[in-house]
Every structure is written in structure tokens, then in C-alpha cells.
Length: 99
Image (cartoon, rainbow, N blue to C red; front, side):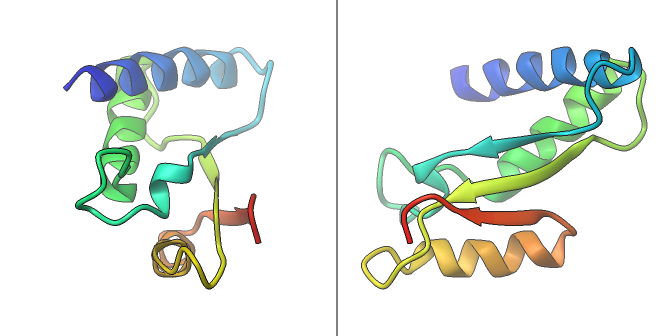
């Protein structure tokens, strides 16, 4: 719950910067996106997307400016590849931070 609150607040601030024309978009980098759901460090892409939507709404925007995610994508962390496919299907750009 604390992480979600922080994500929503951060995304709302970033969405304000988008509205002000100071940035065009933003992204999230987290090793937790590749972690299995059983791992305490796991970060759900769906939770990130929902927090971005809530942050956009708080800032008076309809469509969030979240455009990319960065995570480990390698044979030792196969969850990253699955999350990458899911992110791409949602229109996000994907960057590997630990290939």
C-alpha cells in the first residue's frame, strides 16, 4: 500500500510536468518487474499501470504519459521477458538493464 501511494504521488507530479510542457513522458526502472510474484521485491506491471492512470487523473490528464519500463531481461531472470512482452502489448517501450 505504501509503494502504491508513493507511485501515485510520483506519477501525479510527473504528469504535472507533462502538462507544463517540461517533459514529454516518463518511465519506470525496477528490477522488481522481473522478479517472481512470490519475491518480496516483485513489482506488478499492472500495479504500475494502474498507479500511472491514477496519477494522470490526479493531474487532470486522461491518458498517462508513462511510455517505458526498464528491467532485467536475461536467462537467469525469465520473468523479465514475460513482463517485457506484456509491456509491449500495452504500448510501452522496454529497455533491458541487465541483459
